[in-house]
Image 1 (spheres, one colour):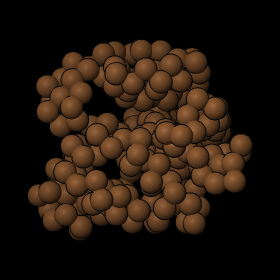
Image 2 (cartoon, one colour; image 1 turned 180 degrees about the horizontal axis):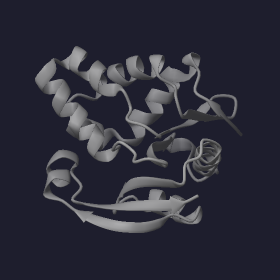
Image 3 (cartoon, one colour; image 1 turned 90 degrees about the vertical axis):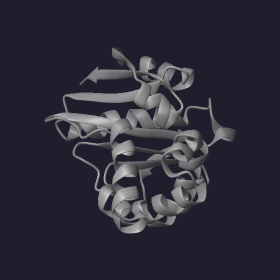
Image 4 (cartoon, helix red, strand yellow; image 1 turned 45 degrees about the vertical axis):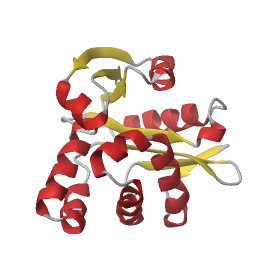
Length: 187
């Protein structure tokens, strides 16, 4: 397996894996999983900053992190209209907030359900950490649902620690999950 930067030819497979991995959350945000797939395809066709794929003959996983606010809001307002686009943008920014100075936020690490537990997620996280260090990032953060044992385990394996637990009715209403960990790694 090898990790590399997301290329335009990868976007279809990458978005398919993203949607499979976060179907519940995307259904809460967009109310239509096919709409979410279309929007993310458009977005990642134009935006590949800090986006990586892991492949072994084909794309097995997709990951993204941010060192500044992701520019998805403009696309969402254009495609969904101002009100619905603004709402979707707010919901996404809840899980993928704008990083503070010298910080990075892991937006997602998604691995094809049939290819999990084979090291793809570890390779992607390792690449994110390496890339963030190269860019002068001092701290990486990630929001993980308390129900996501695999995600918590992966982050812990790489030295992430729980910074705080969020118990939030807003998150429960909009994502179906009330409790989330904010995990961080000092680089």
